[in-house]
Length: 402
Image (cartoon, rainbow, N blue to C red; front, side, top):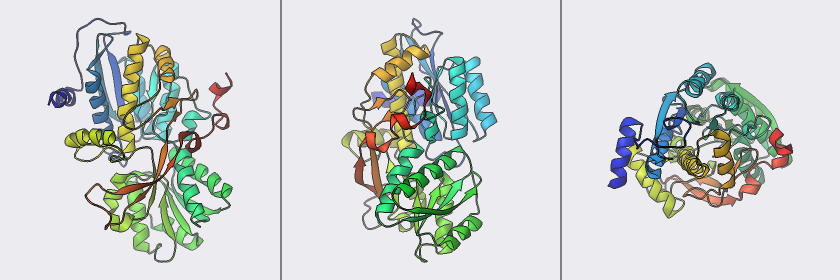
């Protein structure tokens, strides 16, 4: 009850108040949640990310270094100019110390550059492109939850081993989808398979018929969706309507989370492989967090939302340990401190900003296996973090040579 009262205050106001004395650079430590609040990625990120940040702030106690922890949020509308404009205003005018979320890779890449310019921090917990820890890495950014390399490697290796050695990809046409496609192609070829072709679609597409026709004509054994959110559910539903699976083509997705599985229904989604760094029922600690989150949200947290909670808490611990909210000092502490929470055991932040933690190969259950509305998947394999993510010397991050 005590936690619930604190959380309700946080949810109602977005600001937790405290006495005024601090080593912070201004009157508060301020976190900005820049997210998709109403678009194709909002179920996996958006309002759930904001809730996760507010829960972390409440659990931390609402203050740090004697100053209030403030939370602000905005809908980036999946438009680069809008997202970057908000980030610039937050850094330059509103004294935001950390921006978190950003489920749009092109926006995330731009905000990383902006954070470096303004000596602030960014943790793109919702963005996927592995370039965030590659050539576009920054000493002001941490890539916390997942990336296109880890997702592609986990799924591609599993499918190729099961005989799915010819692929056709349906790809959302911006940085996220393109990175997924490139990473997956590398792993399919490395496993002895072939990519027979791909078709790229705009974000938030309603009609996938022309792309699915190309996939059907290709005769690829596996038709793989390199997209997410409502694009993913629309593509798979329409692929079923086209009868691709009845024609002998396997459907797969490089980034599917259980809101999409829930939207598809297990009759449609059963057997789909998933790569995830979190599942809500993976441990008693994860279940306890889920119960609290679901009481406010009405559904379990996604891996992104769970990761956003953990990233926020780690940041606040680092601010406290550093004795300041100055970006470079806080980043040094974040990289120094191990990560241990309900989602991550003995995790760490590499010099390139990549969080190293275990990944899980999961599979959507059959309707008969499921014991409840959100009992949607099972863990079939654990991939150690050092194997799941790109080796440090292969990403091209300029920080690695320093």
